[in-house]
Image 1 (cartoon, helix red, strand yellow):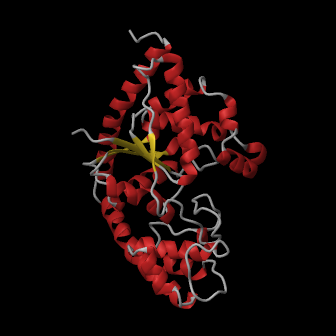
Image 2 (image 1 turned 90 degrees about the vertical axis):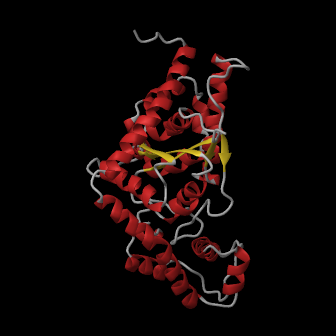
Length: 336
């Protein structure tokens, strides 16, 4: 029986962190045998904010190697770099001409990021949800693994696909497949170590706000030692007045593989002085094997290049077929 397909990707704006791993990559690893997975490095999205062109390529390759180190199997999943397939940008332009401007202006993340950038905010920052829609629709996935914070973007993708189908297709012959979200209940939103009310992010200027998957053991220990806590003894889940407590307990639960009930019972009577070493030990135990595998991947001549080349060739075939279908429906002259 043919597997259902999923599609997902992460921006290449820096080394991946625990939020990326627990909220996305670990889920990809767990379901890669069940689904036909297309997983990409979103380097076109990385330039919607100011970036350093000297490190973009190397960062993209580091993210690809991290995918593999976390357990993504290139024999089961298709791994590719977004900018290596021109159909992404071409379909994004076509969808731009179909998407109403007010659909983009209401996007929450644009409003938040635009406030930070002020007058330097780019058209790309407003428009990247359309590129994201193109990323998804090109590969006709059945499901898109997303966190709750990305649900609005997937709804926009669904709206765009349905608009294309309504304007240029028929009920029995739609042009684009409308995907469904695949949301992980636990770990879908990992919060900052510096502020339990904000999502862990690569764009946060403070390195202490996040634990990167490639951090050394000493760096992990330092970040957990300095992370924000509260003065209350006894740790608990779900108290809205203790966001850092909830976040750190959730990290411990996810990294240790225990249930919430077990962690709650274990930590109910202890203080931060006892808990932080426990979290440090658990985090290092989870990350160290990934970091070691990452080093092995980069040390193997040509391996990463082969994975990315084979991934691009497979993904490009599928993407170009979808793009051709869209262009034919819109009436573009065929290539001679």
